[in-house]
Length: 397
Image (cartoon, rainbow, N blue to C red; front, side, top):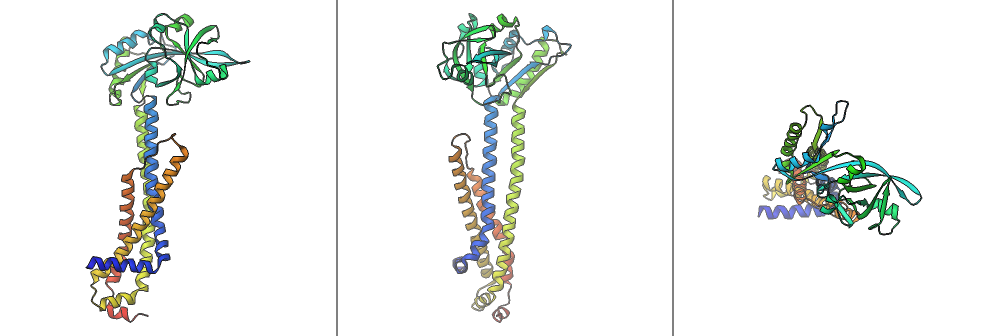
């Protein structure tokens, strides 16, 4: 009966002054919306960054020779080094090497600069290349030293102006090759790797016939899972220094540290934004407390009448706490609905470029936190109402 009457009186009191109740909810609406939006933005941002890094190769390590005055020919990374990595390190799933150089090609009446990159068999797998037409190199292309190549979609567009490039011959400086496929990066690296907007891939054995060199500028190894990458990187470092001079300066790294950094930055940003959202809720709670104190002073006679009719202090306290709880919960509910609707609207606008997923745990936290803040800040006014002397309260005008 105590709870039933408390709820009935609380709802009656709120419906008696709808404008005041609505204005009191405003801060809670903003605060709860902010919590849901912050959690959604941070979660989506973290997943997007992680997927980008993993798409480029979160489970790969890469090595290159740091060239200097003391560099020798025997320091270069060779196909034999790549084979040793495959056979020696158990966690290596795939390995590939590249050698790139600039080359000019003709696009209409203009000469443009491209990157000519010699690659090995597993380069497509390791670098997640998307073959948009034709095919990647097969075993015969590597063993027979076929003069074949793959070009980026950008080169196909510039050089052939919409015509199918497959089967056409392409000239790069003094080198000619037949185009067997077009490709693009699954995850753009924006020119920060050997793959750029205008890149031509050729089988690595052709590099020797063009340059006379038989070494890699960059060598990649891929682990079965991201968890194996740190160990694989260290084993790669030890093996290369064992096969070459110990003092040879190699740059050996992976993207796992970048992934961890992204996660740390995302966590720090989420904490800062959540603190701002919580401060908004605290401000809203202060507003609820002030309004409830005004309510108590305006309804002093009502409280006195109820006490005179036998209402206990606990029942008065419960009524005002319920009023604060209803205001904060209703405001939180409206705020969550606004945040969810806004999120889905943005998701429809950006289509599939970024996958936005609302963390429903964050929605639950927003509802509970906002309601809790309202009840917490409403406790003092409720206790003040419960402590009023009925005789003095009834004499108040």
